[in-house]
Image 1 (tube, rainbow over the protein chains, first blue to last red):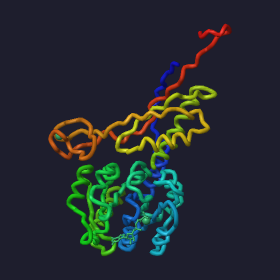
Image 2: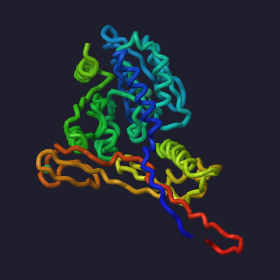
Image 3: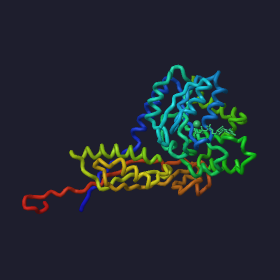
Image 4: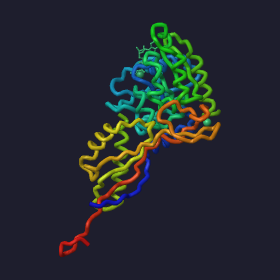
Length: 222
Length: 127
Ligand SMILES: Nc1nc2c(ncn2[C@@H]2O[C@H](COP(=O)(O)OP(=O)(O)OP(=O)(O)O)[C@@H](O)[C@H]2O)c(=O)[nH]1
Ligand SMILES: [Mg+2]
Ligand SMILES: [Zn+2]
């Protein structure tokens, strides 16, 4: 049995890349900044958004695209704070697709927004693989997860424009070596800004908010 | 399980490529893809998704062959160029962290292996 080979060389995620490009083309003229929060289930993504919502309310007009496998609990928590939020349910899918995000994004009142925050499905691996048209992926890691996640899931931490270590108020109760965790982050992304914070106590929150303000100013200059 | 979404993209473009080759499209023996190691693809999961998604297509039964491309980089300090089996992504020569990753994120369909169609003449012998 003989066979011949047809060379192809075609991007497997070309369709996703196309949706992501369309989202960026829509965001730019409206001067909207979009960030994509990625971290394990329960690492504190929604809690951080709640804290940020309260702190930034006077400054930015923002909206949240809330990705979940099931349930609208997270969306309800944010809506309770007066944050306009659209729920994206993946029905089992482990990440938000660029297409899902685009379809929700284009329905937002973009002229009346500065910032769109996507809370991706809780997962350290899958969402890191996909470009959804964001300006920055932000990696979250809670202190209850162990120091070594950055080297176990290098793609996320390598892609991230900022890394947030969450729930630092729990440090006194845990065996978690913050210095070692920082070293692991540096091993995959030497220059990435890292913020250790607690959304519960507010400690460290301001430094991250300052980064966010600066990121917004740099990516969408007035 | 990003493997499922990757398999979906793959099946879509592989079918498009097969349609370019004929009507009805040929049934490939193998589908070759290249994947950067940073994508951390679990081959068994990808195979399972590929099998499920190709059941009623010309791709059914095709063998999925994955060529893994290691994470690789270039050192801005000493010019070293090479690959990393795992983190840290530091230069192994000068230990600098000023390394730009140049590979490891690839994800593309490389080639399709198609069985040669044998043309048979009236007498039954192969031309
Ligand atoms: N002690 C402490 N608990 C926190 C902190 N942030 C979040 N939590 C708790 O951690 C749990 C999960 O927080 P969420 O904000 O819902 O986590 P999430 O990442 O949005 O979770 P999923 O969307 O389900 O993946 C909740 O019980 C929070 O109250 C923190 O800074 N300190
Ligand atoms: Mg949440
Ligand atoms: Zn070097």
